[in-house]
Length: 130
Length: 500
Image (tube, rainbow over all chains, first blue to last red; front, side):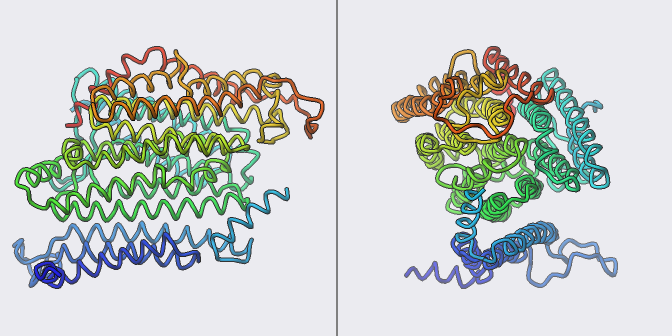
């Protein structure tokens, strides 16, 4: 194993972790058959992105970007843009999670199953009966 | 600053506010408001287009009080104007054509919700077209996804709900990849506005720094938006989604939503990542390969379908393949052909979905081939509309599909190593298109046989005036795109040149 690579990965541990989390979330959303777990996967994926953004915006030793005590110096604060993006992203991911959960509830009431493959088969059968 | 320059912003905000107001209106009022709003926004887009054509250059429009490298911006040029006008027209005609079906398929208490979704859809499409900021693009991509999901699930049937959840899952995969791509891009460039980000990217490419991250960014953004627009092999949500939505929903989803994402991708290619860099890293070859596979496989799937709506949906997979193939050619001519095909396909596919409605009406609402036999005699106008759409998809001269095929073929001549595969695949795909579309057209125009199952309901219902008007206008739009394509192609070429 390349020592340099490992060193980089450990030095940027937060980024490494967030990319691994992104991969985990993505795989769950893509491959898991249970709808609730799919939604969890989606949230893990989104949160991993926010972690990545937050880490990139953070500068060691600086404070929250809110002006207090009249300190106007740029050097005193971290980069506020990624924090803003994270907030916007959270709003977006909350709305899509809510929508997907609502759909899941509807499907569960109808087919008494959370398994997407099973639901697709049941829906097909239901249509053929009509 | 001229007053016209405010129009892109006005049209986005107008569409969004109609959505908000519709939430407290009754279904009928919401419908009227939506139709009026679409007409007004299209007029505003036309104004923007005229302005850009007159001045011959694009302009950026500052949103809020922070100037360029920090604030948010809208950008309008000739290509944005043409796209917005065409999307507006297709949206208006799709909503008009599906009016009575929307009234029938959607529950009384949910009528206004349907029109909210249409409003939000148009607003997000316009924002995707006009925005100059990457994160704004992401937010509107999500709004678009949620509105699209709403359009599918508004019909509370089992197939619709399962199609909607499938659509959501695939869209979220795409959005996730797109978001991580933007995040990485922001980290290496430090910008979210497109123009400064491009400068940073050019600098990075010139100095050779962050070569691998840039490659990853290109891959992740392309794949993310490709999943959302339904490029083969990420297409398997398409048939259910387009097949079971309301007629307006199908027309809008297949004609506009996927095109909005492709337009955004083209914009990012030109305005952020640099199309030359994508060609240099051979990223376009991957898109080319997927596009070529999609052209063949979409048609093969379509041939084996017996349900016409699913067949039309699979044909979309093939057509999306054409568009990505053009992007993948790696030349400006290929890109022009792709953008023209975006227009041609949205006009044609919406025509197919809307005129097919007229044929189902006279066949007891059945969608299989046997029930549709002779439907064109029972509803002549819908029959003509469908035939024109089908011929356009096959590439019959005078129609829009012919021009895009011609453009693809001529642009393929510029890239020596891709010339032969492109021409062969174009020929094979045209042949396959002809097999399934002409088979259906012949079925529509053949007499019913005595052994056919009798049609359940009275089959001589007259289509509503709205449906007939929409079909006539769509035919007209197709003929305009097909017969006076020269100024449109010129506008696309100019618009792409303004992107740099």
